[in-house]
Image (cartoon, rainbow, N blue to C red):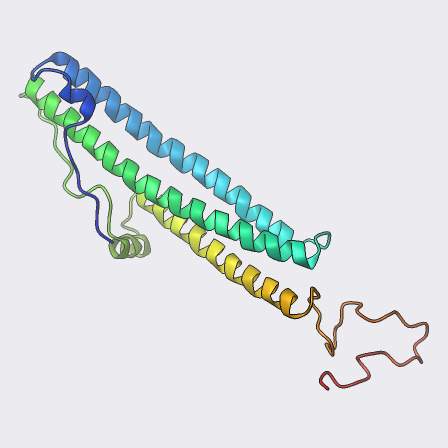
Length: 211
């Protein structure tokens, strides 16, 4: 995955003349805004995705939901969750670019106004490639924002597994004519009537499972 490029001249600063002290104030506000945006997006995306994943788990294990509704819920809910997780991942990476742009603009304006107290710049790109991101996470060298990106990718993988399960579940229902238990199953889930006494032959437990 290619890393995003960085531009260091936000549009808000382009409207002000060079050397104007207001450029420093605008750059500072932009830096604060994007720094706050990163944390707010992490918080809200994590809450929303966690709620959706929890709802899918509860729905999939509930006895009050019939088989067809459960399959549709898993299929649709996991697809929505996967798209939401990938959106959160991409938003975090894009917001990282915006924040680095704002910081570089602030550092440049600060160094122009206060040349005796210079601020340094970032040494690396705003985002790691996918391979570097996973390696940093496994070796404990990732930053907080890196771990949130890994978290959103993990959410996406979990929803993808749920989506596959829902597809197989729904396919079984369609193939079985709307019933999860097929003919000849040794555990029919009450596809046959209940018997009165122990001496009555149980079907299909008393017969072969295949014709």
